[in-house]
Length: 222
Image (cartoon, rainbow, N blue to C red):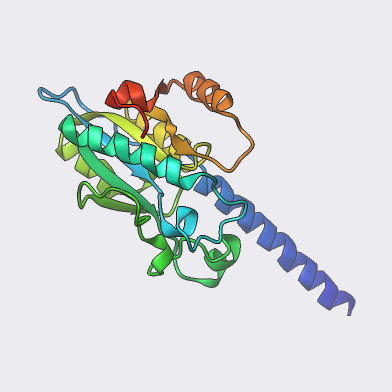
């Protein structure tokens, strides 16, 4: 019995260590080759993780995001303004491997191949440019990095969720590649306890520029 107890304790400790290593890797901002100086640089809007599992009617997220109708209304204004400005629009979606570990650690949310990974039906779809990710930083997907380089993008604007996780880490990943990086602060959401002022302070300290929707699009919320 003592031996069995020791084995079980060892397995539990190993599981905790692996989980901590996964969390550290998941939330790390990635690094990549710094972009070149382009003759005709472009801008892009990245829309991060606005998916059914997180904001849709069937969301099982706990705690849930609140006021999603108003949030999506602001995000959609930003998307329309980006299109009017001739910016590239890219959608980012969280998709985790379908196995026991990820179903357990993420409570079955955002599992690749499941309906919950679809974009929220209320979201304006301005392009077919979609890039999945399995880490917080969208730049972990090499295809996104390649697409932006091929299109000579040197400036990214970011909206979506979560404001202190995937949005923030994606912004850091962009900075690590020398993109000019801006987060539109009233078009991001969080279910953490951080206030808008907390977020702005965090972003600015990290070298991320901040704007509000009215500054970006010139339109008041409906």
